[in-house]
Image (cartoon, rainbow, N blue to C red):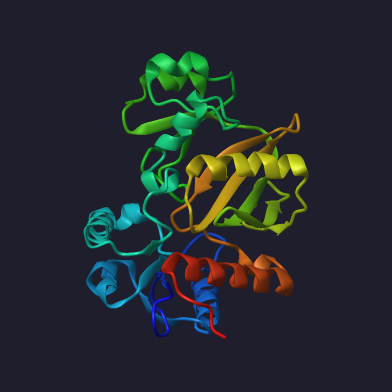
Length: 280
């Protein structure tokens, strides 16, 4: 049943966070201004979310920055939300980046089309030969702690909290954006050295099947997800990242009609999530 009255949302964002090639603040100012048509909204920094969330019908986590910068406070927010039954969007049950990088290991083991990933020296033989290998922390985000090393240095690494992947010689990166389980749009970076210089991309049915497999795997019933992939020289897609915590949406890179459709889709999704009725 719809909740009486106009629903309220605590919109969690770090407007001052400086991300390479992206302006978090612009995207969240835009989104929150459009969502005000249907919801009472207050913006807050992620460090303030736990203290403020009880006064709202739901919490929307958007461009809040890498949580490793405030891991203790984020864990406390999750614990408090779980204990109080707070509606958090995206729901805190995500199996991908929301829970760390373990999913890359799980997907590799399950045979999904993902960049091969290992975290133990005894599994080095499972990695294909490459000129270099990417070494990243399991708790990393936004390329923090990323390093590239030759094969000869892999044996000397301290394993346990790191992941190792071959460095893929790819043609371009492409991202697929979803609300709940519905595809919204795709963008790609034609130049591999300029990740956030994005252009509209028209996906094939095979592309959408690739992306949908990861959306289905994650089993989130509500929320926004971004499937990041690279196109290999052979033409295959490999998963780079499944972002289900606070995916940047690059809404400044799509046309007005696509942007309006995304806002409408997010508004409808939030109403379903909260059990409220859209405005008349």
